[in-house]
Image (tube, rainbow, N blue to C red; front, side, top):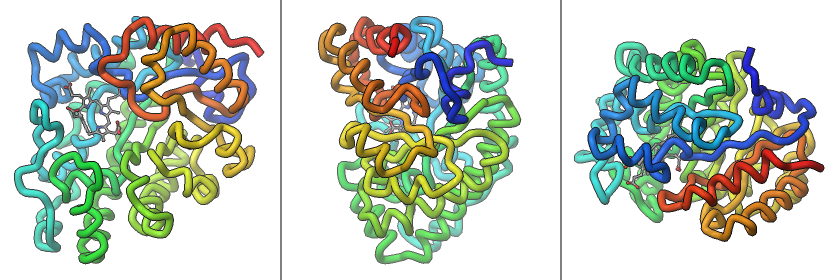
Length: 341
Ligand code: CP3
């Protein structure tokens, strides 16, 4: 039994004394203890070394006492296991020497045996669970197939992911073949994560908002929904689609446990679109954590009032910014811990 089960209760839609809180990308660059490890080990070494990954996972929890931890890793470890050789370049970010641009390239991509290729993630999960000592739940995650395709085809980060979209629109058979391979790998991967001990999973569709509502259904949601259907009896699934407010109504018509929203939609509008069945997660603009702590506390209290304390998980609308002052992150978490309605 997990001592603090606010997060799991919110995912089930049960009544809580206050909503749970965690922050996307909390295991990362805004923490000095993370930056200290970064001096010594490169990014994928940190991901691949269970002792380091589990340590980074518990760092934010030790400092702030959030209601959930998220396993430290990256969405790109999945394509790496599929023989797509991503690097993390300083000052560039994800980088692929030979991006995928044809059906022939897609045919080279494998659907790997998970424990052979990603066993290090499972070991990190087991160690993180030991360190968390059943105090709070542990979240596992994966990128959405569309978001992974974006990096595989573009070859690096982008403001438009134009090459990725062009690939989908001009070579739809190749695109769907790749999306299905990523989906199959992701399903097997998340099932292993649950077996290794994660209590819930989140799918990050960071670039879903690049697509039109019609294209979103065809190239993104269809595959996310396959993952939800495959995982629904294993663990609660949270789907976060950045910029995907236009799809909320359809997303709610699924077996997802919670939907993540960014700050471009009001809590009331999100509730209106999804009905009262599904839990919502979000949605403070991460840049708002640069406001003074007093202001942050006011914004959080208002946000909880607007979403309602039940069927709600307090979070940011996207990952925490690397230069967020610690006191401001603390104010965000404290505002939730102090919340009384
Ligand atoms: O949430 C957490 O704290 C868990 C860890 C986590 C990381 N990446 C660690 C990381 C999670 C959930 C991710 C997901 C991820 N990775 C996404 C989806 C979420 C989002 O923010 O949209 C995406 C798009 C990626 C791909 C990726 N990895 C990018 C774009 C970058 C940033 C590159 C840069 O230099 O700005 C990364 C690197 C990365 N992943 C870092 C961390 C802590 C920073 C690398 C470092 O340590 O220097």
